[in-house]
Amino acid sequence: MEQYAAWKAMIVAGESTTAWQKFYVFFYQAFLENDRWQQYLSGVGTTLLVTLFALMLGVVLGVLVAIVRTAHDQQRPGRHNPVLGFFNSVTKVYVTVIRGTPMMVQLLIMGFVIFASSRDYVTVGALTLGINSGAYTAEIIRGGLMAVDQGQMEAGRSLGMNYTDTMRFVVIPQAVKAILPSLGNEFIVLLKDTSLISVIGGKELLYAARGVVSRTYEAMYPYIGTAVIYLVLVMLFTWLLSIFERRLRASDRR
Amino acid sequence: MIAVKNLKKSFENLEVLRGVDLNIEKGERVVFIGPSGSGKSTFLRCLNLLETPTSGEILFDGVSMTDPKTNIDEMRQRMGMVFQHFNLFPNMTILKNLTLAPVRTKHLTREQAEKKALELLRRVGLEDKAGGYPAQLSGGQKQRVAIVRALCMDPEVMLFDEPTSALDPEMVGEVLDVMKELAHTGMTMVCVTHEMGFAREVADRVLFLDEGRILEQGSPEEIFNHPQQQRTRDFLNKVL
Image (tube, rainbow over all chains, first blue to last red; front, side):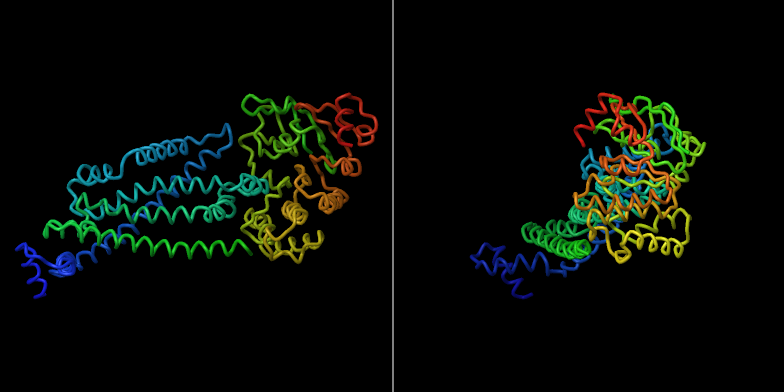
């Protein structure tokens, strides 16, 4: 503490300092002074929370959209359900709009137009991310469902089982295996994209770093520190996912 | 039992079936032969509405299959189907493959279904595979299981869509044996096959399909030994 004050004074005065002294001062200033590490920590907490919420919302939306679109596409010719047709159009618009506009723009619109009066930036951010993720997850799930051999559906139906049962017991369990790796990837993309909610004031990790930068006028350590934290988180989750996938594959070799 | 009237089916601009008329009696064993692309498989798949006919009518026990008011799931429960590529469910054990449909459609209770499945497996010599997965079986074993799976629903008619075409030659025999045995039980059977020996031995009636029409039909003796049409003769010369 005293050493920090002394060396900081030397740097401010323009006296010559060693690399170690500079590192110590800037590191201390970026992470330790005024217990700033707590801001980063609570930022990481928010980041993880937002990721989790957005992922759950994304999966729920994605499953709904994928089911509507797949069921619509698999109707027998000449037997079109108008209700399904309506929902199918809705999901098409949803996927097109979400995938066709930048996430940052979506966040700004949600934060400053649709929920302009809300002060709960984190929730608005998580909601936007979830809605965004849903469109991508829907395509992942739809791809997984379509990747299951058409003969599986035919076999189920030829035995007299209805569409729902055949999907539930035959097609979906096989699709899940194909979907999980991509879903894990989507999770990692989401984790990094949470950094965007700082633009609408969501107090996540990057927001904490930006706060420190604006108070210390020193960008390098907070931002590189933030990058390292994201990297460590992503590596951690990648590792966990790879263990999970290995377990899944092990059951293939029965 | 099955009456087909002027059945037509087109895919986009391709006319696969150009008007097929056919009556199949209960207990009859009908075998379709013909060059690839003649519409044999499409015809078979129309019978249980895996393909929706473009026009024409299919009556099963007097009930129209194509009528939108017909409960197609109930009708399919009475018609078993065996596919060229087996289409067993790879995510389930053999026993689960066999009992899923009977239990879900409330045709049998779980206990009844398992009892029946094991009994039928024993008849095709595969009872020791009940707990295994399809990936552990050979092609011939898979197809025998697929036949048993269809039989577990107690169907009134069995449809076979080239059941031996995807098999190694050495495994064809074991599947044909099961089908012959089934034929001896008096099951109504409709087969699409390239196994002329099987057709000759088992069929009550052989139909030669060409370019979406039944060109010639008759007893195996008539078709194989005294074909009337030049087209039939050419085809048989190539395959026999």
